Image (cartoon, rainbow, N blue to C red; front, side, top):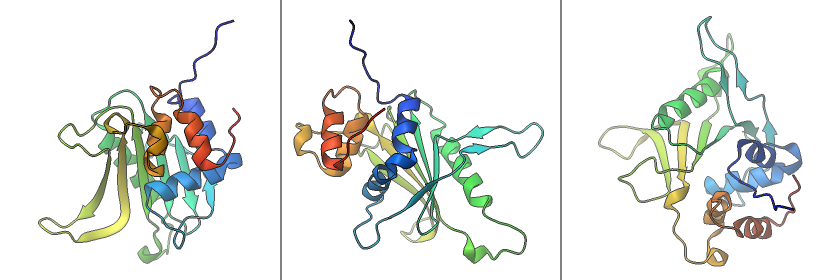
Length: 202
């Protein structure tokens, strides 16, 4: 009998793992690690939302997100997994989080009540060939300054091929998440289960 190889970058597996109420604590661990949330300001609750967006116009585009969620302070999060190279990934991600941001407004609502939206993209390719770091963040900033205009929308790009480590057992928890998704590392899944303290059944 042939042993079946599990591709952990499979869309179905990824959504079952990261977008399931039964494993919401796993999603929280991931978000808190990627967003550098400490014990004091760590997210403690996540609610998974309908990931489908109907077209805004007759000829508009249907959008189906991988994972759409809100966390306890009502920050909204979109997590996407992309295996094949797409150079337009920043535009696609901006389109997704823009819809999430604009849908919050209803008639008579104050703009001050709008909550931040964060897009997190796990990529199995190098998007920024001229940048060595594997985790890059895009925010709205004023030109020629470090001043952030608003924290309403931000994008995280996790380029898995850029991960560098010699021994996965010594890797930091943040990098362990990326190593988990790298299907070239056979035992990375076991290591991830170890640091997460949770058994996974699919």
